[in-house]
Image (cartoon, rainbow, N blue to C red; front, side, top):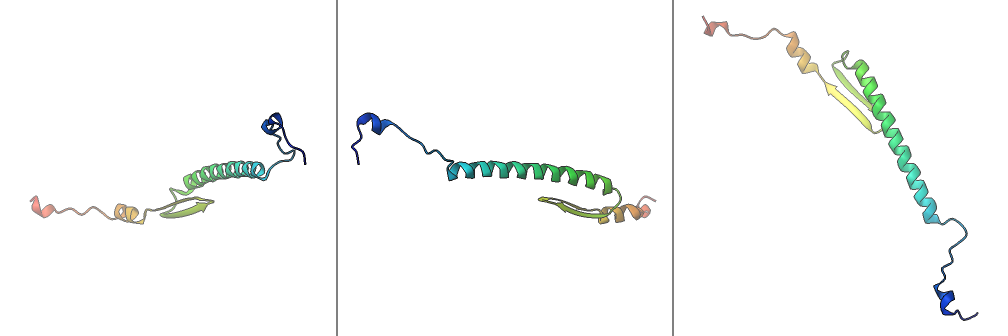
Length: 92
């Protein structure tokens, strides 16, 4: 074993191969990009499919990926179907 001088101690020599942290960082970037693309496609497809069926149903529940959409218009439609209740006796 040789003794290092001051210049040799200050010299930094890196490894020739790729480190695990570097590969892990690249994998995390790819994972986040694929998640963003998947969420974008899911949001668009949820909006398109909901727009096609929203006027035809009273209850609707849909989940695509992590996106979900649900609504219930049964009470609203029941109130529209019934005639309005008026009290004419108090006017005359």
